[in-house]
Image (tube, rainbow, N blue to C red):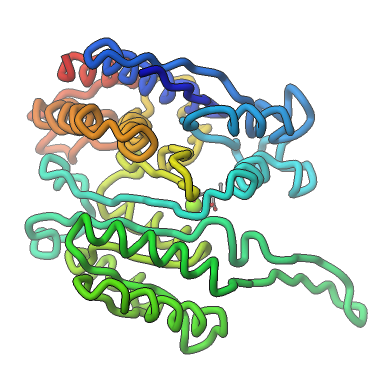
Length: 366
Ligand code: IPM
Ligand code: MG
């Protein structure tokens, strides 16, 4: 089969890490008889430089015309880059938000998994880590505070800013269903996270999640307040299977979950709509401080490409091959700098750069 993959290399380390993911996809293509045709799509700072906008209508059309989009990262240093002198709707991040909304990518899947080989990189104590953990954060991605009305104005001579948190029951129902569907393929447990002791939107969230839960009698579910969840993630991450939550809570909790796995450089993500289309990107940012140095960890992007094969193209065997190759490479002792162990254990592993890591994964697929 032939697949059209839109590629948003973006800014910072984006182009370097995407290049490695393409290397891996090409290797999969050769080995399993598929063709991946890439089309570069401009978004973020590089698009601002080229067109004056973070995402043009043409770029949206290109993304819509693809079978799936693979993305690196966008944005720069928020205190020094000229992109951040622009009005908010013209900054790099606005491109990503516009793309999510235009493509209706309401379901954001962020797996957080602790690799046996990377236990050393996990900042938690051994007794908390136990046999490791494996959770999936399901974040609602096109509603809530991110897309509610906002304004800043003077009220009685005082500058006042307003952001609005809105959800309707349909938006909650569709993400809840996705969450429970995914739980059915995992450990059959959903933790729905909200702030129902304070927010109306959370009380509606809870009511709708309960209705959806009734359709999945095999899935155990619980509600958890977001502040408690932030604590539980470091106290006992093993308790979680699927964490189902709204946009802003999911943004915050997924960064926290990624850090308990050791490095954000390991974590992939998928943003899906109700067709087979998806946008696949590493959970980490553009890391402008290390851009161009050839030291960024490409694994999150490579694993995002594996998610693309699994969720958009139904190529489970091929996705398994990539995930297995990543495990092998770690087992064989190769590490990028972000996942290097502390001093005493350094001798047991070998530090490699971005491209070498990509090559090592390709070798193991072959
Ligand atoms: C993320 C990022 C984005 C978000 C930013 C870049 C707008 O932090 O994907 O988690 O807040 O959603
Ligand atoms: Mg974030």
